[in-house]
Picture 1 (cartoon, one colour):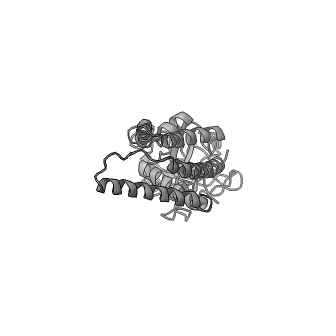
Picture 2 (spheres, helix red, strand yellow):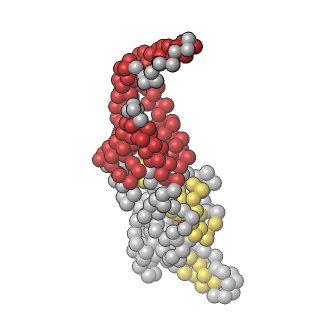
Length: 319
């Protein structure tokens, strides 16, 4: 059983919350603020999980020795028991069981995650304690770092290249042959003292490069569109633990958003191949697009802004 990605109480520090990416604890933490512990059950507003006398049971203890609270019955098992001492710190009941939503390892019980503990359903506090040092989406999902984005792009590029190599290999081979012959001619003319040679690439270069590029571009689009609309993450993004979503709406992005992201990102790269200096301008814009998340307060590249998306830590649950 897996828990949805989100902010949960840190099993190692009760004063903080930690981001669970849907499979593992991340290193993103934020201060715990807002409601007291055990405010509500997962998926319900504070106070909605049970009424007074049902959601909590308080036990009165002696000074310094709080008595454990008794578990109320709610759904299959009780949600929380909370004990409070009169003059000292009471012992809190630890009996978080499986509630109506089917979630459950309780505090201190083995669960999922790198530390051996999974998120606790009764401790979910979405939207509270926004940490100023954690850049996140409006609903609190941490934004991915720049290096992870770059690494994911490299992995995806290698996957697409090798998958399409049987279709593009012949074109690449002919392209390399033309480039080699062109450079050899320039070297021979320069050695003979002839400075009249042209530095413009011959048409044969584009004759072989354009088909290979178009095949690779079509394959990359199918690859990215399929994975992002289904799960929000390509294989490269899964490998580094990040995903793509709409900034204001969790879940895999819609097809139009994926099309906008892909169009701007790859369009700039494609236009950078235009000769006569025009391509240099688009090459600069392509570089700016890639570097933009480094200084953007929302960590969005230009293609993210066009599509209203964010690259975030963790996975996406299907809507």
